[in-house]
Every structure is written in structure tokens, then in C-alpha cells.
Image (cartoon, rainbow, N blue to C red; front, side):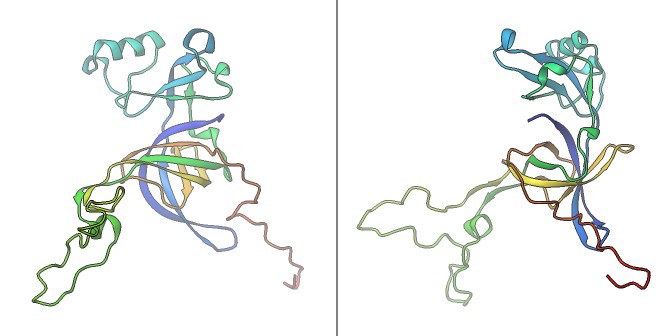
Length: 231
């Protein structure tokens, strides 16, 4: 991995391709991330870049250990604290530099990581999309779990049985998405399709770990036409 950035999901929109295709996109506000520390194999055991992101805040509202890291790096304090990226070219970065959305270009393949919406304790119908019980008035059992297993053999509930429980609020990564547009003036990245999390949530956009050999899905050069309009 050689490029990544942390941003804030603004929501979804759509963009029209040159051939008229409607492209659903997720809009991410990727404000510049300041580099607080550059870790090396000799000193830290691994090479990485430590960045600060989020809304700029005053040092007075931060704890002394956190504020000290910003003071030592000589960068503005951020509310969302820190994140590390293990770049292959980490040694090329310097403390105090910024990573902006311009590191990505249209057509780049990326992996987007975020935290999904939390639904709290949910039943099996909402959590696992199981069937409802009979809807008749005499049923008395509409949204229950249903049968969990035989009562004689094996006389227990099998492991990994789909049961009610906590639903959502977990880290999810969607791989091999495409950067459709980069707006450097507004620090915006337009990513094809949906990405995890609610609007306003923090997401991490990284260079994809998969090797993609196919050409761009959205952008194809239109066929040349003659003066009469025939191809």
C-alpha cells in the first residue's frame, strides 16, 4: 500500500458518465491529514506513518500525552486523534507534511473501511432475515426464534446457530471500489457504490489489496463518428 487517507462520509449522490450512464457514488470529505510521526524499522520495529485527522481543536481540551504529540510534531491539534498507515514508501514522508485527497486519481481502485450503523439488540427476523411465524390470530407466535434443534439428540443448540443479539456497529471493509471523481478544491472524493456507516461517520480509504486487470467499469471512450453521424 502506498496511499491512503481518512475522511468523513457525507452521503450518496450520482454522477453521469460521458455515455449517459448514471453512476451511484458515495461522497467522502477527505480533509488533509497531518503527519505526526514517521515510524522506522530500526527504532519502532516496523515502517509506518502516523497521521492526525478530524476537526481542528485547541490543545487546551486535550490530555497532556495527546497534546504533547502535537507539540512535538509542530502540527495543529485534531479532535479524532491518530491513525497509522503502513506505507511501502513510509521513509519518503516527513513529520509535519499533509496527506490530501490529491493522492488519488479518477479510476483508482480502493478499499473503504468504516463502522456500520448500530441497530442494538435485534431479533432473528431483522438480524438474519428469517421467516415470520403464522399471521393468524390464534398463532400467538409471530416473530420468535422458532425451533432451535431436537430435544433428545443432540439435546443442545448447535454452535453458530442464528440467534437474536447485537446487530451492526462493527467494522466492515468493502473492497475494490473505484474513485469516480476527485474534487481537490473542496477536498471531496466520489467513490462508486455504497460504503459502510451512517452519514457523518469516519471512513478510511486505502489503495486496494486486490490486483485488478479489467479496465474501468464506468469510463469507456465513445466510438468515433463521422460528419454524417455514422460510426
